[in-house]
Image 1: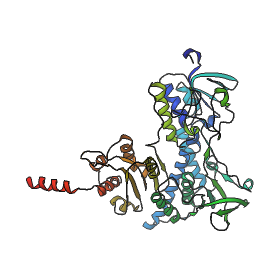
Image 2: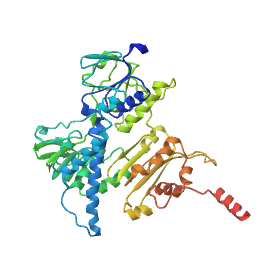
Image 3: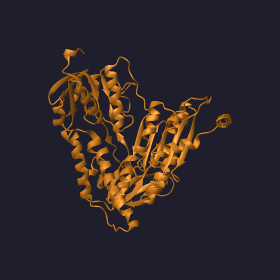
Image 4: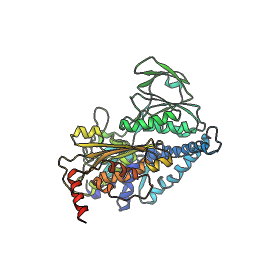
Length: 481
């Protein structure tokens, strides 16, 4: 489209993590941007309104309550459940602080045109909203995703909550049934248990956090059970017998009942483009309704792209950030980058946290990459001893060199950690992985004692081998001095 023929340089559908990132950068360099979302309250996306921000605020509050109860070993007296209304007031207060710079008026003040309403495509470069048609040189669909609904007999009579609705709670349920053992389910489940609810998790898989290495997820599962959560694996809710009782069917054995006051559903997310009329813009979808994309996040219309959850890949806020960086680079460079998750990382914010980065064993095996698996526990780590998290675990996948020549790097290909603050502790490992650094950079680093990140070096030191040839060379060098 000719530059002077378009109303906007960029039109973005959706003001979540991806949409905001794109709009803010384009406006910063004085390009014309139209940002569209359904309601003013939706600006900020799932992360601000229903996901990352409120869930981490809830986890923070629950951690405070848990630590207060743990302090009884030092003579303090703490009892009773938390005040859920006060907890939710805290959550909303944290959201309000961030919402100060994620709302339509603030964005308009930065030069972004913001429209509120339900858009639809009316041409290759045209979108209609509120009775007006706007054209853009390029357009990005960043309409996010929605929680999957639990569809079983009797569901209509039950108080079913998901991450879009749970923040309206004002009373703590005595018995909470969580359906789903992924990150969303275990984060909220542990937080509610710590606040004073009795939590039962029902998960269809053989383990919680199935994307994590068995050695890592086992540590968290043991901690959750030690805190009092009941976890039923390889089981599904087959029906609700009443408004307060579920029938659970295990893979092996007979069905059994679980009583509850409230059900939290965390069984995944789905994308939908209903009402957008993508076909009028020449944007094709596959048999599952997902937009067809190439490795540049480009649709079958070369001027329309997709970012964030709408791309139906890894559904994380920082996944959207990765998409934004890719799109912005490709918008301005004749050399196009391809989407890659080889150095992607994520954190499940339970206690202990579960952090994951780079390639895992299954992917390395699939690619035929030669590697070694290095792992250690935290049992003898000084910081873990004094802070009482000796059950932590660190796992690294290290490049295996066919010819171990002197000076040749051995890169960190991926890894995972389960420990308090694991998401912060692995940041240097993420940097090493993304930058292609060798293990020697970690080995040679001097860490202040006793920072928790020393565990990263400890694992590498444990696996550093001194070959017979090097032993001989060092012996001769020492005796020559």
